[in-house]
Length: 222
Image (cartoon, rainbow, N blue to C red; front, side, top):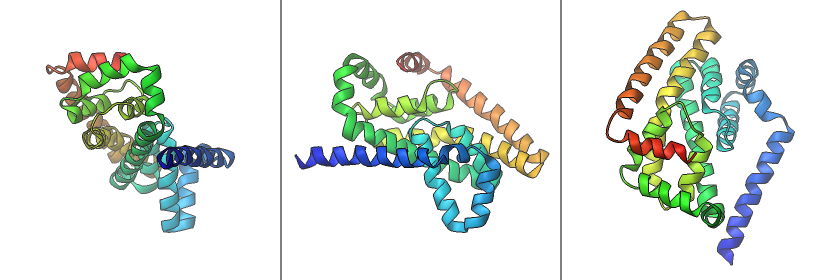
C-alpha cells in the first residue's frame, strides 16, 4: 500500500510541477537564447541552477535536447554549454525513465506487452552500446526510448551509461553552434561543423557493424 501511494504521489508531484512550469511560460522562455543569457546574468548561480532544472524538466517530457544545447552554448560558451546541457538532458532522461519504471511499468506492460518483450530481447545484451547508437542516430524519440526502457527490466546503469555517452556528440555540436552565434565567432561555428562530421562518421561506422540489424529493429518499435 505504501509503495503504491509513493508511486501515486511521485506522479502527482511531477504533473503539478509541469502544470506550474507551463502556466509560467517557462518552456517558451527556455528556447529563447537571449532570455536565458539575460536571466543568468541577472540571477548568477541561482539562475544557472534554475535554468539547469528547467532544461531537465523540458527534456524529460520530450523537449529536444539539441535546443537546450544550442541555448546553453549561446549563454555559457561551447564547452561549458555542452557540459551543462548534457547533464541537464541526462537528468531529464533519468526522470522519464524512472517515472516509467516506478509508476507506469505495469500499465505499459499491459498495453504494449509484445513490443516491450521484443525491445528487451534485443537490448538486454550490449545495452550501453546499443543505446549509444540510438542516441547518435538522428532518428527516433528520446522520450519514447526512455519510456520503453523504463517499462522493461533493462539494467538502469547500462541504459544511463549508453545515454550519457551517446548524448555528448550532438550536445557539443549544437552548443558550439550556439556559442558561435552568440559571440559572432566563426571559430565556434567551424568547430561545430567539424564535430558534426566526426559524429556522423562515428555513427556511420557503428551502424555498419553487426549490430545495425538489431538497431533497425529497435527503431521500428519507436
